[in-house]
Image (cartoon, rainbow, N blue to C red; front, top):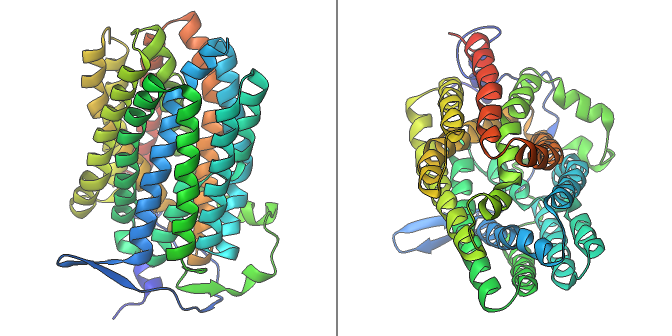
Length: 432
């Protein structure tokens, strides 16, 4: 029977041969055995790992609360007299603090375990939503963004399923976690729209706060202190933030290329998402309730693709093929987006756009965790999240400028150009 290391070596990166882009690192395995929680819970004829099941529930709750406040935030800022430019600055602040916290949060999870990491994420979310609920000036809106520095529950959930799952099924496991997020993404905007309609934007923020507090309790009851199958010896004595460690992760074979592709392909959708609620309100004249319905529709599409589509694709195609052709699909989806003139057309174009984005993001995340040892998967996911945060740092300012100067169509042309470049690079780099 082949060992884990020999199996990995067969999947050399594309610079050296065929197979998926999942190279072995040069680090020696210095891990020591560590017991993890393996309890199961029966639901009908099916059995589920309690830790995995509770993680899926928490990700659902996290997404619900997050999208409650995302859907209502533009209306709250408008209510307080904040124009789209300052709304962009607010979004940039959120992205900057998350950029600073992502890599540190990943290391925190590797060193102190899944329970502490998830509890920290939900505690930060609770504080952020509470401050948002009491905000009555732009200063308080700005202050509500600061606790989100460690609000990385999705990253924490990815760390847990990566630790407990098998390497060969990692993309599928991450995709199914995205399914739980998608359910929350569907319910969150809908619930937020209803609460805003019958109560207020501040009440919606308080609902999100209560949901996050509930998640802390679920984490403490069901998630064990440690979830890794083995615990590296270096964890107990290493600094939580180490530039040397981060540099080693970035320069791991294949990691830099994947992070670059993530950045190049992620900027257009980052710009689009950062201004989604704004152009829905300003360009398509949608009220908060209908904007919630539109976000819920996007959530349904994401849920289907991540929960079902990715698992099917990874069984039939290599990760490289999925990455290349999903990028190709995105090129033409963005071009179509540039010609959208009404809500119906937007809904039609969103279908291929979500398919391409969901498939690409899951495959890149899975491939990145395979470029490092098991003890560093959390830190690598943190770097992956840092790239997303960097995109979100730039996106609101770019998006606000494009929307104000060139209109909604400019988002589509930006995506067409950047994904065209990304697709060319992928087909050259990952050619068989």
